[in-house]
Amino acid sequence: MKLGYPCINREIGCTDNSTFRLASYSEERLIQKVENNLDCLFQILQYNVQNGFYFFRISSDLVPFASHPVCTVDWAGHFRGQFRKVGEFIKEHAIRISMHPDQFVVINAQKDDVVERSVKELEYHCTVLDEMALNSTAKIQIHVGGVYGDKRSAINRFVERYSSLSKSLKSRLVIENDDRSYSLKDCLSVHQKIGIPILFDAFHHQCLNNGETLRQGLQHSGTTWKKSDGIPMIDYSSQQRGQRSGSHAKTLNIALFKKFLLETKGLDFDLMLEIKDKEASAFKALNILRKHQNGKSQSENAAGS
Image (cartoon, rainbow, N blue to C red; front, top):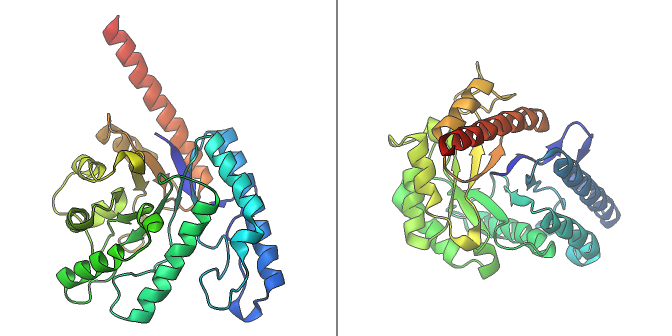
């Protein structure tokens, strides 16, 4: 299992998602921000390797406004050297990478302009990973989208739009069960139509399910990943007390995480912690995971002696 956190490292004060207002856009400002973001991304990855975190979600804002008509800069060509440098470091240290576009990316939308913008944004994400020369185990996760009063038609639109995407993009896309509209069962129905892998969100499954246990959910989603997709990715969080249902925890609930590890014992996956204090909770989780694995090894050794 590889453990990680998304986008921001609070300890080193560096972020790969520094951006600016569209009204103040200029090529000079864009180049400055992208250079800073790529430098920070490299620093974060170095920090992660030094501390045992081998799963990271790259920010969608790595290249601000990359899919917007205002951006006419050949950013991929301009920063090819830096992208390759980051990619080589990722491959050298076997770091698992994902990206997660914002909620406005909805390829099953009813409006054509929304779909067009969504596809452009997804192609931008794909270009980032391609420029790093990462293989198809680097994933872009999205939600199925809206329901629009007719889930069957909405799923059919997703299937139709997905089928028209580029081969490179389709090789990277995974769908995630959400907490309000599309359960694991719904995602499995999409997978059956087009073969897209399912990134299982354990917390969303707690909020919206069809009676499957956590372990069953992991097992069902795990079968949707091919060898070329890599080990299944999992998102983990828990409910923040006193907030609306589905609000992610501010920090790791140690008791719940230990329970999660016991319930998923023997299953292989890479784990993304969607906890608001980022690497602080990742350190707690990593310490628990190491103790859990050490205890398992000692039990196996005792049984074999």
